[in-house]
Image 1 (tube, helix red, strand yellow):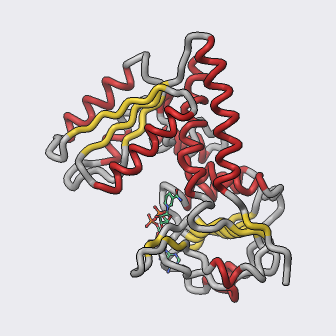
Image 2 (image 1 turned 90 degrees about the horizontal axis):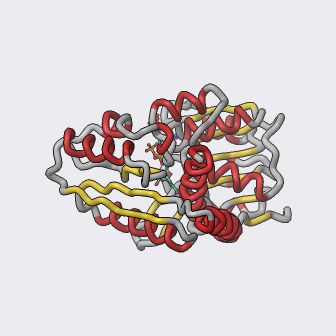
Length: 283
Ligand code: NDP
């Protein structure tokens, strides 16, 4: 049996948050406490939990954080007006629009109302373009977290074959661009990939971002591969599982993230990091 390394996202996140708190304390001492404003439209219970966690995490590292809640009946113009007002407000360093928006609202158009200098979720076209150009300003939080987890186990992507399963704008595409920028040879797989098993089996680094419980089995993994499982799926029994069959991969993988406790804790941590970046850039 190989000596698999369990990548402890909670511990990595904890360490990073400690460092962030110290940087925030320094800024605060200089009279410049960073501030994030989260905008929630509607009353989706899952989104409410996510937003509360983001606000709480900001407070834990000493940042200012506001939450603006708009009714589900808000018009596109009303949502955009709030985002434009926050973009123009010098007291706001970072703006996060919680997704998904209620039906009928155009999230792409709304996101474009966020000043790219405050786009701490890294979702504006300006941020996506910068990432594509290899000069990222704000890196989307979950892909950023995946890269930090690779770093935490000393996995340098340079020269390695990284296979990304999933090509969403939130996770798959940006994580692939980051791996490319880190000099990996990157393959993207998706729902129309015909020989998924053969391709994933060639990977030194596997990033699974699909949303299908345990779809990546041990027979798809090259011995020693580093496996980052982004997927969050709830089973019929109410248990959270990833896209990867964690137990089955333990004897095969070189390093692997658990679900929960892997990528999840990193996402908000990188949001805090991006908010600090916003302040440090603005000066
Ligand atoms: P999306 O649904 O937007 O994208 C899923 C991707 O998986 C698509 O590109 C799709 O392909 C691909 N796919 C679907 N079925 C297959 C298949 N059978 N074989 C190969 N590829 C397939 O999801 P997200 O990217 O937003 O999220 C992915 C997962 O990550 C979800 O479980 C989500 O909950 C989780 N997540 C976790 C976060 C965290 O903080 N840990 C943050 C964000 C997401 P196609 O493009 O062809 O449709």
